[in-house]
Image (tube, rainbow, N blue to C red; front, side):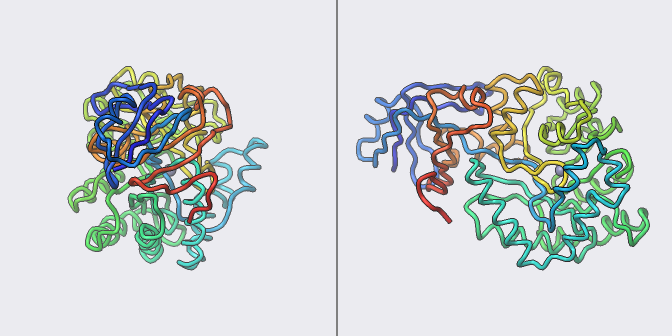
Length: 407
Ligand SMILES: [Zn+2]
């Protein structure tokens, strides 16, 4: 048993829906499980024999859950980013041979070892930015051979990082150039999904349902097949235009619908009723430079659980930092500090169907905890671009510390 005591603050969302801020607080944990959180004196009295670590002057919050990433890819699209800074749109870049298909070519050409090494170095950066659980999508293979290669890499990565990884099959990310769109949809439904299920290569199935990508009908057919095979549903929807994706996510009882920049009110109401989490990606939203952002306030007020994620990918958002997303999210979406921190932790855990295990500092949850050298948790938002993270604890073990070199 270990007790971290005398923390300036422990700030955490709670499963009850409340947000708890305790001053002069302590947390007791045994191996990887939290046993008690409360005032320091009370916790120290109750766990007299525990190993005690003084964290005076520090703030503790739950580890970040990044519920939407495209972690495994080959190549680099920094040039595209610079083109966008000069005014090129996402669609113009895709039409000129850039975008997802550019990464597809580089990912297909990459050996499993090269792709694994690159993903591992990115996971290290995520860890040192406080992320303790990451959802990872395939989607740059766009053929069974290469989609399987990516999902197998994710399986192998799970054994090489202290971050917990959650796999999502995103074969329907774009259309490969070598087959017709209709044929590719048939391949996803009739060939890839049954293989994904049989080899247990993913927990979720995702589809890029948007203008110029997968239609509502195609998305519905792919998702229903995935559900029959036992996969849970996530969707990229309404990022480029309002295609009715939010309502479709509700109809399919998706675990999450992501992006939602153009989501309409009817879709938002339906998502609330069907308990679909909204995963908002502020880094991508500002990167697209459309000036339009997801209607987060309306979602919160309609009762939708709102999560934040990086959308880490080589094109539209190359960021490993959930703290940066929180600062962006608070400013762009008019979310308050409690709503924003909840979006990066507990609601993000709900968006990957893990809120019973992670996302808050409460008894029974996994001890995934971040220690910051700041006087109160408001500094997470107040100190723009500077983060003061000192220690990352994952499953009760120090996974990263700013003074130690960690693997
Ligand atoms: Zn994405």
